[in-house]
Structures are given as C-alpha cells and as structure tokens.
Amino acid sequence: MTVQVYHYPNCTSCKKALSWLKSEGVDIEARDIVKETPNKEEMTTIYQASGLPLKKFFNTSGMKYRELALKDKLDEMSDDEQLDVLVSDGMLIKRPIVFDGKKVTLGFKEQDFIDNWKNS
Image 1 (cartoon, helix red, strand yellow):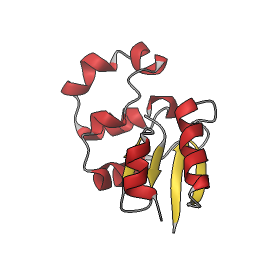
Image 2 (cartoon, helix red, strand yellow):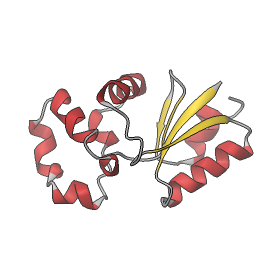
Image 3 (tube, helix red, strand yellow):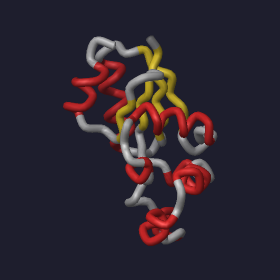
C-alpha cells in the first residue's frame, strides 16, 4: 500500500520521516506541501481520518501562523473556516503528514511511526 507523505523539503523532521519510511520499505508518494498543498477536500478527509482536533494540523511555530495571529483567532472560527485558512498556504500545515487512507500521523515521532507504519 502506498502512503501519502505531505512534506516540506527543507524541514528536518520531514527528512527524518522520509528516511525512516524508506528504510522500512514503506511505499511512499511524497508531495511537497507548499507546491502541492492539499485542497480542502483532501485536508477534510485527512483531518476526519485522524480523529485529532483540527488545531493540531496548524504549524504553530511557523512565521505565517504568527503573521496571521491565528493563536487568538482559531477558537472563534468554525472547522470550515479553519480548513479554508489551513489550505490557503502549505506553510500553515504541520508537517509531515503521513496518510494511507485510514491512518494519519502528524510530525515525526519515531514511536508513532513504529506503531503506525512499520510493516506497512
């Protein structure tokens, strides 16, 4: 099974995640999250499959997040509005996102990858 990996090429965590997945023989389709930002439908599917709060998908340490002052605005926004903002710029999205159509991991934590992607 092929897993989608939404990544940013200059991101250290993304590089570690891609390296780990390749070393485990996981069949991946890598997508540059800035050049191929997920559209709203894709992001909605990923978000719903994850079971995580939508806020977890925001790159809270990014400059764009701070520029837009999203920390103070997200609580007042509907999920639909948050999704619109999220897909407006790939740099707003926490990365990497690994998704196989059912499971989702955000960021790179080796134990999460072992639990979810080993032997995939």
